[in-house]
Length: 584
Image (cartoon, rainbow, N blue to C red; front, side, top):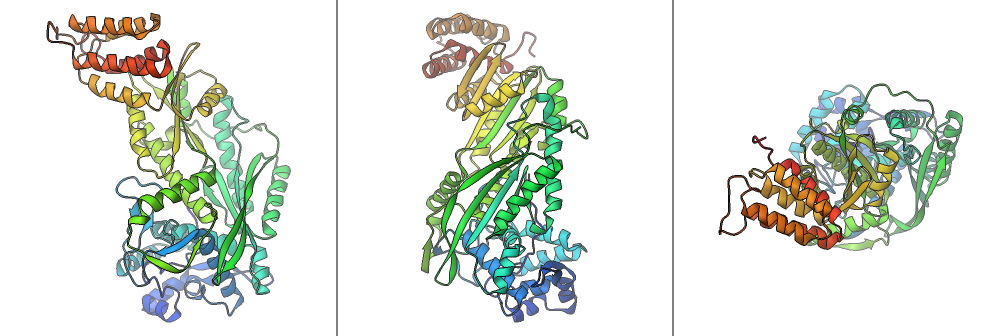
């Protein structure tokens, strides 16, 4: 679910020389030779005249002209750049590096390994990378996409190093394309409102499993269609959602146009409209307030006749598996709460420990969500969801297990083969959760492959964290604290000669018992007789570590749930780590 954009990379030289990245003389000196100047002029940026007619500008001109405002096109670039930078800079209290210093860094929401602070190569090294990318491409769109992917590791601002240049470029260019912004620039006026629209196809209406494959392809079809229809607005696709940005009356115009597209083409969409009021302070744009997000559903809540193009790998896995594990990974709370948690944690754990100087004119805006930050969070979450899919997939391809995907939630399914456990998957999930700086809910349902999807979806949404086990008409919930206890017991059982037949007897007793004491007596007696661990009769040497751990697990699960069914299901999850007679 990686985020890609062909936005004009006007800040392309910030990694090379932060302070002078738009200075015409310095830009000419950096490119240096006729060959490199020609290279930068080869790529064209979409542009518009004062009356709205399509035009184009060379990348070279966009780089050195986005801080000027003498000409109309320069003014449009400059205003959209300053507006995008200002709304993305929610807090400008400290400066973390000075222009000319090379210790720039970006704080990432999610990293696969290493620290959350990314320190990219700058100066001549960055210039070599940029020139290499420019030389590789002939089409502007392809070059801009790769350049923006490269710039995703660089910060856009020294006072708020949480937003990347890629994100900043997208928002700047999307705002620049707004007709209302062009009208304001023509009149030399500033925008007072800006908006961000999230567009997706609601999945809550499609609960039948046989609809899912058609639904997945339908979502892709709808979003591609809207991307094409609204291409001039530079929509940004994040998973199964689109982001659109605009100012003033263009916000309502986009909503109306989306509504018309839905009615005309019989589509079903869900829109979430975020709107910010823009003011001025110290000669800069600032966000004065954030309106509550508005939601709207447009279209008929039914899946049209839509045949999937091919069988999805996850659907094949589902059809041939008797038992499956469904998993839902979702944001914990509303977007503004998530953003506030992210900001507070980054400030407390990372930025407060960085060398920094007080900002001369500090700005600390009263809200915690901006368009830049929202897209940055979406970008990081997209990488996190992709890696979550990789740990669930046997081949490492997240497409094989990804059923539904959006910013708020992504749903996976994996078929369970004979003797295959789920605790390794949860252990990997716990490790992955340590790499993301926001709280994420992870819930799972282990059930028959034929269990109704609408019921699976209800169960997944009903549980913030843990595993729900469904066997026939029995349903048991194991929570956040149960899973680490089970992983600890699994670690002890793995590689030990624990008798599967004896373990099955213990599980049967757990299902029959009203309390844990009789079950623990059975575990201890089988251990003392050398039946629990084959070939290890204890005699007078006390109980084995496996016996003690199982009794501890029984006590802890029972104390939390007061239900022996929960104890039995917890033990059942450990069955794959025992050994059948014959050593298998």
